[in-house]
Image (tube, rainbow, N blue to C red; front, side, top):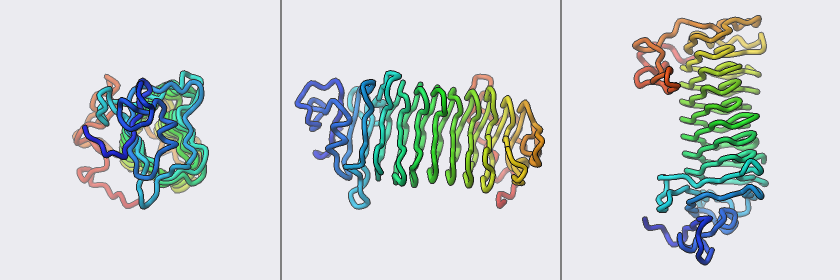
Length: 332
């Protein structure tokens, strides 16, 4: 595959001039490539980078710009083809993968895999803007897979958060769009603060909750929270202004949707599917949201999952709750 001359290459195993001009002369560290990048540049990466001695640091100096576009980082396979493999960042259970230490604008990252990091991607700066993460994997990190604590106007799409440890797979502060993402085997799947929107996200077999909401104005469409060992499908620690539509909350060891304040009078029961949750009742006023069953059923019957017995909790084609076949009034 041919690349524009201005593009940059990273391969930790390269043995050439270490100037980033070709695969043979690739930079051996993403840090060096990032520090030299300019707006609109593509950085192609292959292989595995060991960061156990210290995380890669994005300090905001080579930000993308509105005029020049994002800085784009693409993981490649061994042959250098983008999207056919992942560039692996390995923390060795000793360091974060990537730290963002100042406000960072316009970064695009695809097919990067973070493994065995303390935190895979740690962005803890106010108003970092216009992020795009696609087809990234966060796996076996000690604390969080991804921690975006002060990010906004970002998109996380087709990412996987798997087997991350003491905190959650994905922790997001606010103003982010999370689309078609998977969380499995984490302590908690997704932890949201405020003003986030999640479409078609699947969270299952996490040890506590599927989705934990600690503030207001989050929106869920067609999400799944299923089979959590000690928690609920969705746990609303703060209730005001959250919208949950067309979701299925099943086989959880606690509630389908757990609310913690009697002030939450939202009608979750009539617009989502609940089945086989262990604790369908509560002392709060919104007991309807805890129900084992309710008035909504899957189009065509059945669980609506591809194969729950084989732990495939993806929603089967034609089983989406939020569809015209249900004749539901979604203007709530």
